[in-house]
Length: 236
Length: 236
Image 1 (spheres, rainbow over the protein chains, first blue to last red):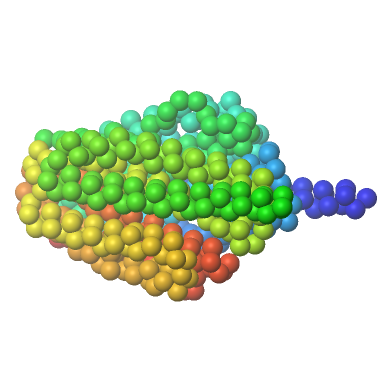
Image 2: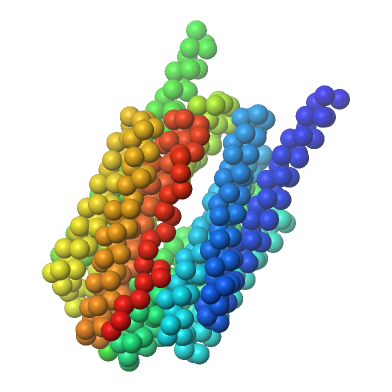
């Protein structure tokens, strides 16, 4: 009786972690989407909301980590359960970073809105963000189903985002060269694009963590951890 | 007798984690320093070495994390020891990111060396890197002494790095506006400067982790988590 009572309380602790991670994920996703929307529409009020929402995500990460450590200390889990709890900490940290990247993007809205975002660049930015957010959304779905197979396939999909980011990077440099008045806003857009590309990386990290939580092993094969723009030059 | 034998093996596991973290720290520091040296001196061979060394750091992080989880499962530590082990995982993750940032900086050496780094910018970049690496070095020293007081004071020192980064950011934009031929290389230098500023952030993260490991509480007061350049505009 007592044993079953303890197990139930323990299960509830694990369920608490899963639920809070899912909530954090939904919020991080929303913040990242809103940040890009604020950027494209020069919506300073929406940007401000994203900036203040970040504190909620920071608090959520801290709560999940504290609770996870408490659960480990109290329940002394092994094998699957231990991996599950360690995975929660890791995923919460990735989601907190997604929130930071959304916040940093939102902060740039004011610097960018003075000159506005050219239509073609806005489309590119939206497209990049759609890819990264689809990646994040899918990985959060996989988190609820715990499919190692799907986690592996999401992890392999990061290349599309990198290709889109590379093309946007090139386009932004070209705009800067065409007219020096574009330099300040395009610099901020470069950092925004990099932020969005990084969100894709965090989705990939989460996919790897889920794979590890589910199987106890690391996923197969190297993954591209860096974008391809680091060596790129564009002639003026 | 058996108990004392077990304790010794356990202590050895903890010491193993500390030693590996210290080694990772030294290596991450070296990579970051070499990356900036390669950038300033257009040293492609040194850059290449930084890029390939990153795999060693990735493997070290994985090893520390695996060993830490194994130790938790085997020893079921509580309180101080549990915080110590959880802290190792967190610090290893920050150091792995420092290595990534060094690698990303090194990758940009080739793109930048075509036009070279103007002397004034090279000085600025070196100065920023000295500040960030001093921060990292100090935090690694605090890791061996476990002084919560020193950890708190390092955490409060991040502002100097942010101020230096802000001034470098402004200077880079000005160079780009003066001559469109500077745009490609200055864009890469902007990302390099941002990488170095992020190394300072990771040093701050590590200081917070050490504070938590030592005291069981979070350090006092908010810390500036973002740089000040996000809202900056420079008129051409």
